[in-house]
Image 1 (tube, protein in one colour):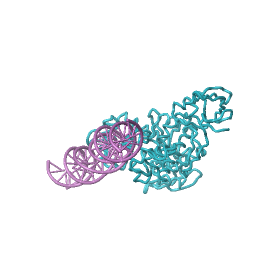
Image 2 (cartoon, chains in turn purple, blue, red, brown; image 1 turned 135 degrees about the horizontal axis):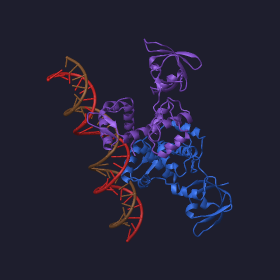
Image 3 (spheres, protein in one colour; image 1 turned 180 degrees about the horizontal axis):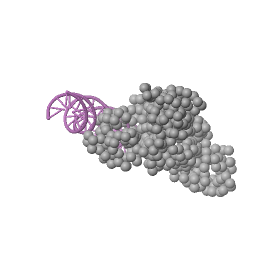
Image 4 (cartoon, helix red, strand yellow; image 1 turned 90 degrees about the vertical axis):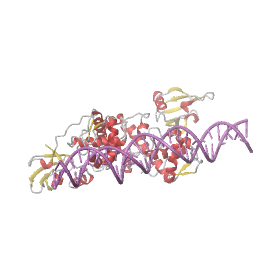
Length: 219
Length: 219
DNA sequence: AAATATTTTTAGGCTTGCCTAAAAATTGTA
DNA sequence: TACAATTTTTAGGCAAGCCTAAAAATATTT
């Protein structure tokens, strides 16, 4: 249907729009896809011809409903495959993304549906990101950043804002995984660091860099 | 490492050599890959440059050990994925090939190994074809064609020579699956058809076209 | 508002993998 | 053996995706 490359462009544009940006500019797409602005302009024109996005020269792009569907379906497949790799094949959460980048382009609606059933209809991937439904609906998570949470509440670790392997490995090291309970005992305005108590009454300090990349919900 | 297309060429050449052909000619590759002889010549040159096969103009090609390894690994991945689709996702044996054609190109040795373990180290795919080991060893099956088997032995359906969906669906219709026990009660020299008794004492006739595409082993 | 800096687009070119048409080599046949 | 048929290769070209360098448009400073 659509090429590997086209799907990656659509997915990238979709994710950039999710991050608040109204209209997506050429350079930001190029940066994410590790390519050059000129290449992005080429591809944008092709995707516009196929009615997958709206494009006006020098004005950036926005996905059409058709383009959004393709993008969301790619995200759906990515996250379902991550669940498979994590739950069934016992990969670490820091290892699943790269392989899912390949698997998300496998083209078979029946496969996606059967995979979803096999995994028992997961709602979130191993990083806490919601899995779009077959119809393209994504349940907005009501997670908040740990750095924005109030002290003295029981919080549940529910996701990450930074998906890089190094960050995930760091969380492994400090034993913070999805489901870990966290209480903020102290917030330091000076450097943004926080003191926390984890499940099992373990006390630790999180730097701001850590605290701003952990998503939690109030228990 | 190697492109989707390169892997498909190597796999095709490998399979043609398995079918007895010593040196593989351009046209037969083109036919299998549904492309043109000129395109095959182009690709053959590239693969020869990469030492994946030996090529002499107008003389056909033969895989090098390096090329064979890539081909066998692709076959290994294909058959493991077929097992996954059949055993875990409950696809029919007539549905798995097409999807595995895509999945076989996913590039992650760790994934292949973990998948193999998850499937509990299967030795044969859903069509009875042997799964190469990680080292590239393929156990030769001692299966024989049903049309060549002797009457009055208990035979076990163990594989197919024709892998097309129509043939597999036909076998579904006549309730012949891997493991079905078959006894030949009569062989007709005239048209090559045979009379058989299946597990459960069900008597049927198989045309030569069916009998020559079923692989069995003696129980 | 003019000058400067940045962003985006255009122009031209590259590689991969494919094509057609024509030439060359091989194989089959009279 | 020579002619015909087939197979294979070469030559030239096309689309997808990428690149660099230069031009054009937009944004930012002064």
